[in-house]
Image (cartoon, rainbow, N blue to C red; front, top):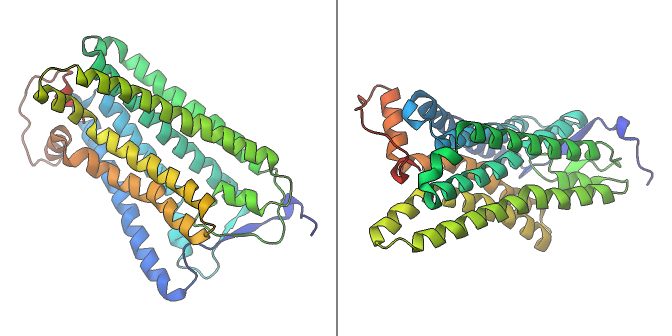
Length: 323
C-alpha cells in the first residue's frame, strides 16, 4: 500500500480501553474521579507549601514542583480520554496528537528529573547535613529546576519533530487512550528507524540516567545510615526518605512493567491498562503518600483552612522537617 502524504492525515482514532457502549459510563466516572483527586490533591500540596513560610525549604520546593508537574502530566491525557467516552467518534486530530506527544513526554521527563533531584536533596541532607544550607542554596535549587525543564523540553521537542515527519497509511487506529509514541511508530508507513533510535536514546537519557542517579544517591544514603550507631537514629534517617522512595518505586516499576509487558504480551488492552499505573495512579497517590505521614504538611493545611492556630517553634534544617 502506498503511504499517504503526512499533510493529508487529519485525525487518529483512539480506541481506549473498550468500545462497548455500556462500559463507557463506568470508564467516564472512574477516570473523572481519579482526575479530580489528582488535581485537588496536588493543589493542596502546592497550597500548603506556598502558604507556610516554614515549608520554604529545598525538599518542599521540589515537592510542590512535582505536584505541579503531575497535574499537567495527567491533564495531557485524561481530559481527552474522558471526553472521548461521551462521543461515538473517538478521534484526535493529527496536530492534536503531535502536541499531546510533546507535552506527555515533557511532563513525564520532568517527573523523572524531579524525582532524581529530590533523591540528591535527600543524599545531601543525610550524608552532608552540616553543609546542607550551603550546597542546597536557593540558586542551586533554581538551577536544578531550570536544567530539568530545559532537558525535558529539548527531548520532547526532538521526539515531536521526528514523529511529525512520519507518513501514515489508512489504518489510523491507536489501541490506547492517548497518542503513545510507540503506537504512532507502529502505524507509520515510512521508515521508523530514526524514531526508534530516538525512543531508545530518550529512554536512556530521560529514564536510565535519572534512575542511575537515584540508585547512586540511595546507595550513599544507605551506607551513611548504616554508620549511625543507634537504631533510633537509623530509623529516623530512613523515615525521611520513605515517602520519596515509595513514589520512585511506584513510578519506575509501573513504567518498567508497561514496557516489559508490551514486549512480552502483545495485547493492546493490557498495555493501555498497565499505562494507567504510572500515568494516572501514581500521580493520584503522590499527595497521599507525602501528606498522610507528614506532620508539617498536615499542620500547614490545617493552618491554611483555619483549623489550627500555628504555634511558633524553631524550624531548622533537621531531618525531621522533611517528608
